[in-house]
Image (cartoon, helix red, strand yellow):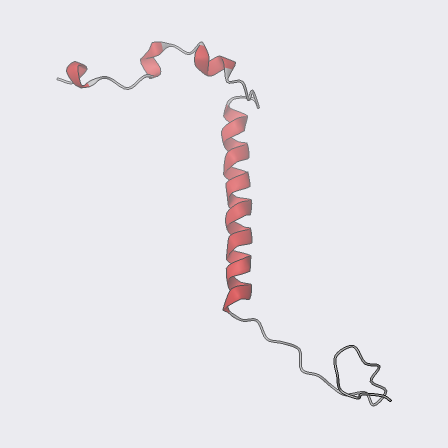
Length: 75
């Protein structure tokens, strides 16, 4: 017994089915993908400043003039 028109059944009649349209969730998916790709780009540019040194040896030996002044140092 054949059940025509059910999902997964072999439909020999050649029914034309409309392609589903994009909804708000599809748009949100692409926005999230763009945000992740932007974050990867920003992280890689930040790591380029330190020549991809993840242990941050250059920052540990950096001069103390990079440190923000404390409240007592402000005139």
